[in-house]
Length: 258
Image (tube, rainbow, N blue to C red; front, side, top):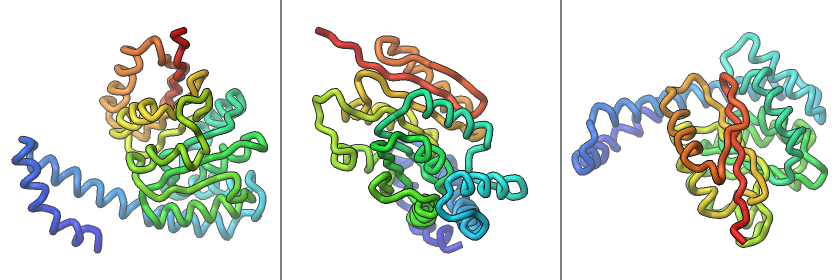
């Protein structure tokens, strides 16, 4: 409730911004309220999921953590991806064998654990989560699953803030042939295209090939069409590998111009 109260002082700024940019005030207010309600529900879900998994799993066993997640989702609302989507994610990780992975949208740590257990010994995951509480509880679940901080890094920030800082966290040098081999987007679908463009601008996608997995959770088709429209307009760099109900896999490759 405090988040709703805290959002009230922002209304004058919303009204001024809407007048300047000719955006309907009602639309902005609805989006602000929807964001607040999603955050409130998300925090409740994360607390409940964390407590269930932490107390019910075998500590140090990643598969036990995932099984407990799935058991919770059988009887409770959950922000975790479904087991079917998880299996598709597993298949992609096994096929790609990525060494550098970026996850945008950590949630409860479910997808983080799924990917970490399949990465090679030298593999590294950077996961980005906007909400501090979610990031803290998700990080604890990753540690409970048996992984060490040398294998992953949690960044508590927006994706827009995190992306420019990834070179240092991933120990990448601009202009080299290195980069991210796999990107999982499971945050705000409206940010998928801006973040994809930012990753390309920062030269964070491995030029020899990077898979980008997009999770869609009953979102409007417009978000998906926007991304696919950009992909279709760039056949020299992007292609769609697969489209499932909740998971779309695209592939980025920058061909040599020599």
